[in-house]
Length: 298
Length: 298
Image (cartoon, rainbow over all chains, first blue to last red; front, side):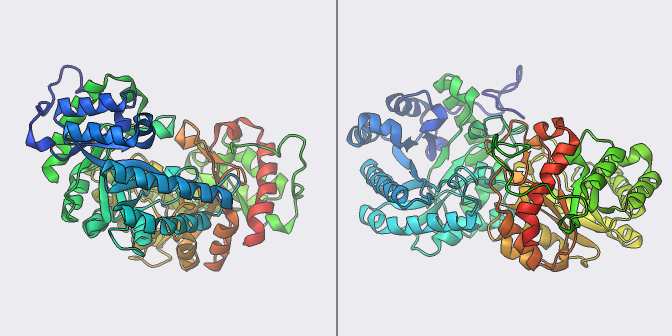
């Protein structure tokens, strides 16, 4: 089951591509990195053309035009900003690096507020070079989050801890399970610290459906893509289109619904083939897969 | 931190290679797959030449000479058989395949008994093609283990559930955490069903040290190798030599000691570079790394 951009050759899609205006697309969000070759302007236009209700923004492309301009564009387009990616990377052992990471995260909070989104996605960061103390790195991540809370509250932004597939525990994200992220968040109020639920990172976790269903307002973002095998050589680009892999979107989405989640559903796919394809084709495919595999269970 | 077979060029090893007879090697075991190009006879001779106390056997090379011959060789060499790899692969949805897997696992139990080892390593198996119900696959694994218990008890073999890194959850091992494996085992007596603790699979698990320390006699095998990044393209050959990656062997081994574990420590490394190197060099390196990184904390 490798990534494909369309139905198997000769076959008809099981559902037709939904038209703009289809109410089933209202909660669908295009994460900018899924169409990585599109500029912010192109991504906004592409989302609108497809009838998608929201967009998940990344700081770098936003910075190219500025937060105010980006905000005007998404507002004028009638889109919601479902989240801002990403803050975090605050596991350094060097105090100066941690100070610098804090300042960068303060800026990210301001950007999220300026863009009108409540959800700031935090990728915790990995182990410092040569450092094998994962327990201590996790504690530094928690401490860094705590230090950001007052500013986040002031700006009306919720800090979203993203638990990441253990494949990234060493070099990208030391928070490895939903259970762990929820435990970290539990020391704060739900409007202060929440968690990001991403199928790619969490699909394998024992008891994940029960954890999701009981997580209530702690879940501030739902991100979807598939776990495909064999895993592509570049593990940072190993995410597949929904339906191309092993994730049980029915069970996961039902558990999200049981949690009371009423927010957007972001499609976030990092894959070289998908990045190489025309953006409009990618958006048409993801809209179809979303309507087939995810939306009916929300 | 990629796999190396020796110290960095120009540097001296931090500890000298231990000599045969060094008592620190008494609990070290060479898993056959670490020196994959050696025959069983060569692996036995190589372990003896290095002064290693035990060997972890695989069914396929044992089958080439037969269980009785293999048993004579290891007995004559004065080695213990620390484990037999591997049974399992019992997550098929097709009943005939499950029946066939049961029969194969009955044979594996007999082979373990014939070889004089108590520990049969069970790799649960992945999701059947096109099947996304991980919860059900895990239940089938548990049911299959339960069905094997009477025969295992009769032969004096303990079934060892191997929780596997979630990177393999889809295609190899649906049991993903030590916590989950311990929960599965808890329905049986410790002499019936235990767990395999492998640093590669478990190093990232939140709370793993506490889980290990409290697992007592449930842990029937300790396997070591390192998690290296960037992850090699073939994830089945992505295991590194201890010290080349991110695993905290000090903390993990201390937790194993706290559990009361007094068994062997198997070095099991799957890596193309290590397989391509002369077996005697690999054994010398792993013995040195073991004495430096693992043995002091047992």
